[in-house]
Length: 510
Image 1 (cartoon, rainbow, N blue to C red):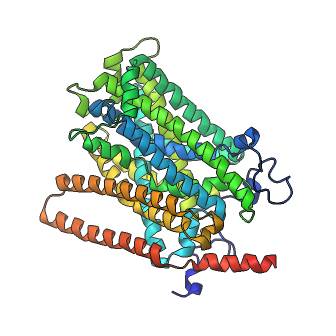
Image 2: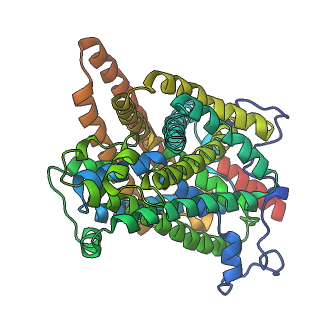
Image 3: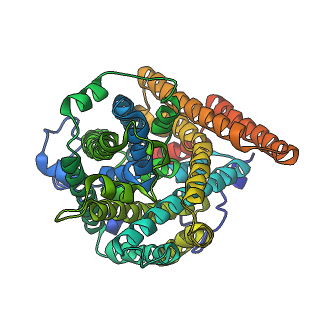
């Protein structure tokens, strides 16, 4: 395909010569000590002050590890498998960290986020499919998050506020996001830090009330155990860690700091600090997930109701098990769930802006993009709330289908990411080395295979009828063909856009 054809943005509001970027220069945080120093320092000493200024993007990224879908997976894992899958939760978080660090590496080293690079490097038809699949994944994730918030609002209102009304309340969070964004990136990051702290305190309080056995928890973390009875939950623990939209999001968030991609020392320093803060953020998320899993393992593992616990009825079961007291555990659970739902829906709005702007090169005012992104999710969520408001079982079935939807989209984020970070023409000296490349592809292959197993199990039990089976087979064939295309493209392609940019930079420097 000719370069002239591929350079054209699908949509542009302010002219062909202006491209969408994650942050304007005026919006970026200046890291004190980087802009003031002369030259390109290869090895600057560690600074706690710099670490503080780089802290933020990793914690926003970590919210996807704490959304209502993950919390439901935690509570079901604890109720059905007890403490036996805690080791897997830990290693799944490590795998998620590897993927997210690659995403951050891409954003810092290139000064572009994943959606922008997909637009530049892929043929038009392929990038349109990637954009549509990413939007579908985002909508599916947002439905789970909004429903989770609506359930929390219903709990905290003693059932006065119905599910559909909770969806409307949650939909208004995009205006909170726009309000905070006007005051700068750091204010927005502080808001999310407060929500993460609310989750941590709520679920820590529940952990203290349940009093799980410390030795059992430690053994569950350190000693791998797996049985035929827990294999499906084990697959679910790994499958829900990688969120497609979160891979796109993190590559954009790291550009909120003013770093010159042309200075290797500055880029390496930024990558070091981002690696530390992302690791700390996912340690916090692991601890929060651990709290939820162990509370339900202590209270419901081995009981008759273990298999029937879901996000909708979890609060009531907790209340019956642990009682009321000065601070009823039902409301503590509702507060934690509300913080998880609200934070994840707002980051979903954030991710939607980057995805839409990056893939389409669409320059619109932020409030318009936020409104469009939020509408994509709220309209189907409202329909879901009205249909399933009176049926807990139907909501659980819906959640299973949404998990399937997320699983299907994972290759469309992981394969482009791993392809791009492996190419010297795009990453320069910051491309991943052979060892990290092998590890990354193994992690991606493991996640894709595990989610493929989930899909196979799900469709084998849910797909009935000749017509439906035929449709699923056709869609599966098209899906597999596109995934194979992405893999083959990753092996054979030449990143022409990056070569063009490199030549431009070189001629400018000369």
